[in-house]
Length: 188
Image 1 (cartoon, rainbow, N blue to C red):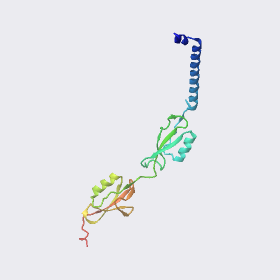
Image 2 (image 1 turned 180 degrees about the horizontal axis):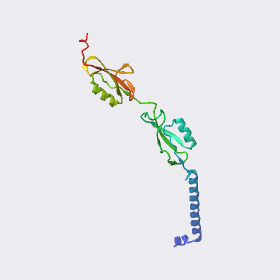
Image 3 (image 1 turned 180 degrees about the vertical axis):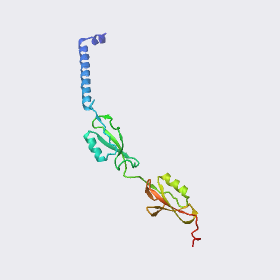
Image 4 (image 1 turned 90 degrees about the vertical axis):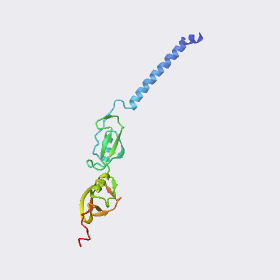
């Protein structure tokens, strides 16, 4: 009974109204503070950074009040300049807030290097498919007097003999030196 009387008393109701008023005022102040600090409703368009160098990107994003973060470099793409942006996130023309990070993937300086497989004593056909599997190409095939017809005896790159395991840029063209089926001893 005393509790019920206390809940209905003027003092308790005044305190309850005062507490509710303070909660409402604090909530409104917090909402205004968040609107001000998070730049609610203020956006900028993300510029297209494709094929731009890092220096150009820094200038463009600085003017737009955005920041860049380089995630990684991708596989070399010959359609893009070296050290230029291949991909970005968020995409161009998206609306973002000022100060947002734009994540970039950069084109490396060239193709990554791959190891030349062991092609010696393999057939030309087999050697060609082994080269394609690692990302290399057959540029030229030269024949010498050796008994093994279409068998690889040497592998050359830029006119020099190379050994298995030699590192070459991906998509490089190598020369295969193969036998023509003639016995060199019978030629004398």
